[in-house]
Length: 170
Image: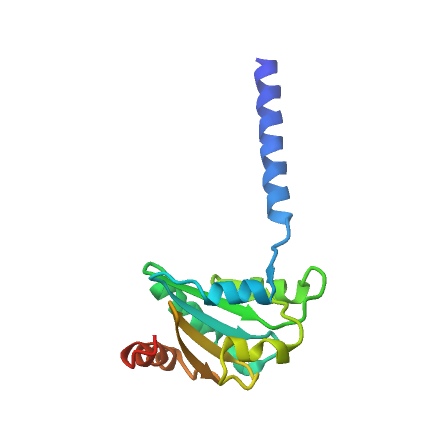
């Protein structure tokens, strides 16, 4: 009986320690470079991809993130992928970005873009992009539909997607 109690206490203690160590492990943000970004944009399958370029220090970017989160929740069951591409500086463990993601409970895929000199890659994302953020790119196979500026609400984001589809830009 004592051996069973000791074993049970040991197992419960180990389980609690494992749960605690898993809860303490830091969240990590995937950092991508230009080649990885180009690869994501050039995927040719039957999935609609929405890229939103933003930063934690950009007030209009932060204001529209809830619309992207809601759009992602509504469309995630279909052939849809959304990427929130952070243009924050890649600093070590990216604590500021990680903290922002956790605080705002972002569920969308957040990628930290470390593409180097913006003059080297902005035109490759879309030739109409001046480089200001927020900016969004909707991609379906080889078709691209670009929007520079922020969405005022969820309906304006949905309208953008619908207009791109209806005008066969995607």
